[in-house]
Length: 461
View 1 (cartoon, rainbow, N blue to C red):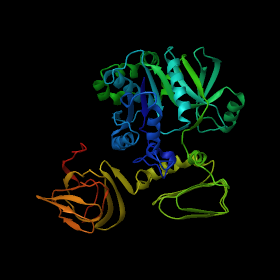
View 2: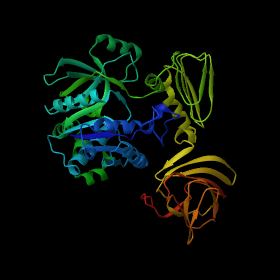
View 3: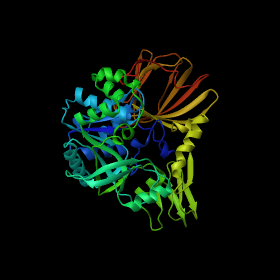
View 4: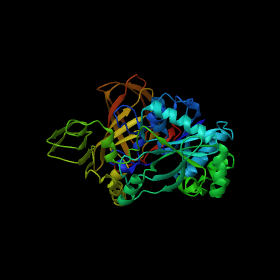
């Protein structure tokens, strides 16, 4: 069996914690492991890391590599989509990768999973995956259905019919996210399940379904992998549900008898987190005074709430979002407004992650910008220069190996160096602990695109 994990989404519904530059699959909701790392770990009892393929985009490659290392699955493969094309083209290209690069045969099962769901307990999920693989081996398209616990309007639904001899229920139809009245009818009927977004099928069955219902995707995905990748932008943007599941007569739904949450809203985060005796879910430096059934999530400062009830309060160092519970699906509308206004907050945190570590903008004004830079042990920035600015580096933690022109020197804690304008330079961390530096930039133009790279171990030249 091969596992395809989809990890390219932008995650606007969990703004401001999730943003385009650092979406929700990389968030550590429980404070320990990212959702992506948890997803990878769930499959390790079923397959070897080398049989796992992560589909993402070039902007997230290094984030994915970090999370694979955290999950103990460095041997997993990463497929970088040239453009975002929804789930059907992504899965088709990934299936071709499995055939050409991983040696998948026609009767081998492929299991497709999102990267940002919470599923517990893990052993029950493993049993369900094996059951799905067995059913897929009987020439079926298999999906997992979640028994509704409420009339949820944020999920798609699967209408089921008669039992399938190989286990599960025959899927009769797929329904898009309903309004409240329709969702209540689905729940009352008893044969509707939330669509989990997970699928299992054999290689042959998947390509046969594409040939029947999406011949344009089928023809391109039938090319050798490198050719299919080159022509990926010619594929239509369509979900696997629309492209195959809703049209196929071979879909079987296996109900999942475990906890599942797609973490698609702040209401969902509230449901996942533990509560105090008043029903409050608290993370960070928060003080709830006479508050009830409220989410308070802070990152950079004290949040004090008085008499709050049924509210969602989420704070980062540059944005605070406050919403009534039940209204958090509208957060994506907020992000749309911010994007239309050209606001940086829509896409980026003040802390930006790079392959070598991160930087945080502390302050900026006319002609200057101040950053805190953290370089991971053993990492290094590219050999580069800037035409429009000089830089002053002050080491506040660890030790740096610094190249300035033809000079290489060690700079230790409480020491500093000056990097003149238009001079080649590089910063490295040869130590065992993170290197922390305060950087002060001076110049008439301080944009991030004023970087000319000459050497780079991360392939960015």
